[in-house]
Amino acid sequence: MSALEENKQLREQYDKACKHLGGAIVKEALQPLWDAEPTLLAVSWTQYTPYFNDGEPGVFSVREICRSSREQRPGYSGLFEGDDPDAEDEDGQLWYEQENLWWSPNYSEPNERLERLYPALQYANKALQENKKVLETLFGDHTRVVAHRDGKVIANEYDHY
Image 1 (cartoon, one colour):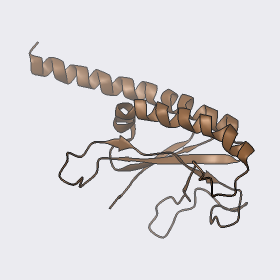
Image 2: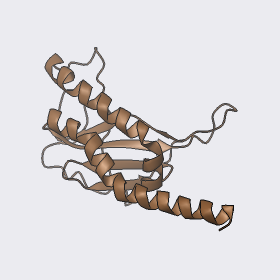
Image 3: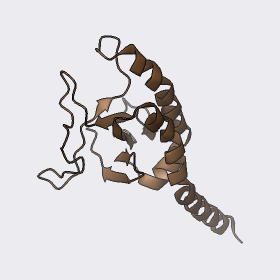
């Protein structure tokens, strides 16, 4: 077998392994968030290679996890009770309100929630970062990934201009 054929075969095996293990990796990475925050319905992240990076090479990355929740808090225009989290907008794209999960000290979140959620968020972000090649193979580049508590995962094209 030539080096080119062997390389092709190894890439195909890697892609197959990523698709086989990818769902389990995402589930395991996010489980601490579901456990820590009962009102959390879905989380999302974007993953992409920058189009422009000030002359430096663009490198694929997985961005920080954001959340979607039905609870309504002052100053947050998120999903209300009864809203359909899978509602499509006029372009036929699934719509999710995103909000950073890392709350700033200026935000009026109870400290108890932050203390409960922050370790889970750190774990999940780290696990996704450590498996970014798997996520790129599984969901692609220039993608927004939305993972629901019930295990449903949706990947849509993402434009990050």
